Length: 617
Image (cartoon, rainbow, N blue to C red):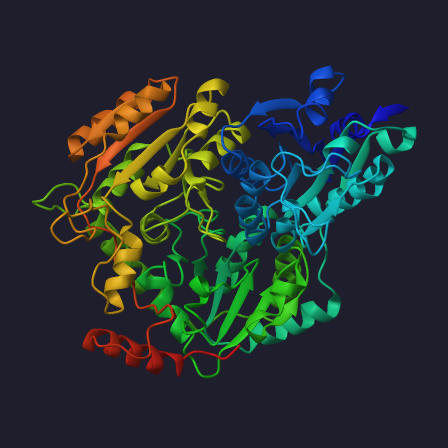
């Protein structure tokens, strides 16, 4: 079939399917795009020509549309994607941050940036970066460091191997992440006689990888010799949809549960064994028992520094690690004994064999006591009353208590992910959606659009700080275009409160983290706070805006928002510094070794002492 490279790519993507647990579904839902000279007459022409079922979504910032695509795939448990295309140069480079976000979170993201001419005859073209050391280097080489697969299609027939390898990575639960297929703009329009077998329907099987008999035996032996095991539920439990198996496993053997940001919400917050978030942004209950655990069973977690408290969180000198992960790269972290398998398959097999031993952990009242104390602490945080105004934790509590329990609550950066992992009570799977592999500012509103496209029947509430809103909110307009009702819960604390808190806790006075105006007397950013009417900004887009300064206004706005059919934005004015505290955790950051400040010197000494308590690998 004689087609241009772009026409063949569209036809190929339209015929990709995925099969999971016997259910077959279309893999590529559509394409987000912002057209420029590097793609509009190539891939743009192919999309406009028709003859396919791919839906075109118009983005308004390349990073923003790619973040929406990430959230879509994340909410779909990585089994459906929206590809993204851009022009060359700045349009392409805007997607590099999103590529990092996808790869860090193990989320499939297909990027199709335009590129400079393969023939090189018109060079240098508009937006081309010329490298004197290599004429084959273009802006798109910047994607190499943040992608799981990268290719440049310099001849139309190269599309076949490039596209197949792209799909290989995108549909592999162990290797997935961002994929970049750079497309020189002349090649996009070049024709080739593509074989019919390349363009026909293709099914990619996401088969569950079982644990080997040896792995099961080793895991059973480790668990039956442990007195106080702890189960850490990560994103692998979410994507393999093994929350029922994880819950049953914990119940059968009396094992407490700690949740990562990617695993939170899959087991009900009210479950007696669920101690909630673990780690730096975790709560007191999980962190307390983590220090006592002699075996940490890691189910589908990357074991980041926030989960492990920079390898400090597990203080038992005899602690061992058993890691169940489909990705071998993650399975061996923390010197774990690895079970390289699908979480559902592995947990089921280990549970069945362990049950024959009559095993039950030695935990007694420690689990219920820790949970009761932290439940009371959550209630306290949800009911903090401040004379200055509405506290962040009180506002979060009101939202948690006044939305439907099947609503999707989202976040990504700042102090809100910490408050949410510690305090948010999620009772149903897939209702807690946090991007915390990259903690990328600007994901929140774009991600809300993607989650809504993935789950149009659900209400989506995204928690975003004022700093992150200012960084990227262009996809509010895309939500308006698509009739996608999202609810933006904007917490205005007049600055980057999370980083200011970190700054202050390590001995440095507030500097550059509050939104002060330039003071003409001092020449510094220590003038007055410049108030922003975020509700009015949202109304300018066509959203319904609410200004909230107290709890009754928030309750009333939440009720009214449920009647709306357009996106809403809550401009919630919260008291500066009213986020939740850390709970018996430690995070290693690079404190200055020498300083004129006694407080910084003390912070450095504290860091040095805590490093001694952390595991080396």
